[in-house]
Length: 120
View 1 (tube, rainbow, N blue to C red):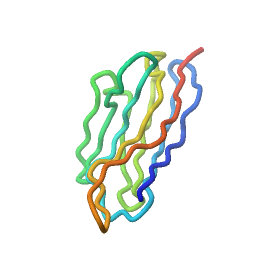
View 2: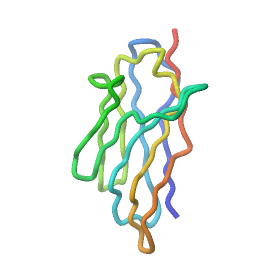
View 3: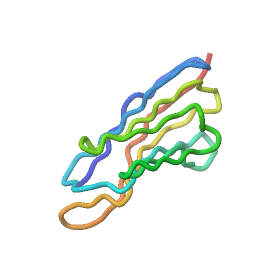
View 4: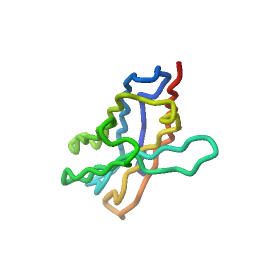
């Protein structure tokens, strides 16, 4: 069993910053990629940023230059530093771990989501 626990969401004014964290726990031997997705009301879930175990990162065009994803592989943790936040960044942010290697199988997992609200 693998669990992802997110933290760090909240209410922030436009132009402000937040840092999200997501830690995976359980019988984990390795995780291929960890990333963040978001879903705004009435919209589909979209990729925000992803980081592979080898250090490659990829970002949605809408967040490039403002958000930074990082990983601590030893702690099975991924972070998302969000700067210069805009109202359109308001959404529920979900952490995802891809191709988690456990003693028994490979699997993917999602976190429960954390609300980020950007408003004055």
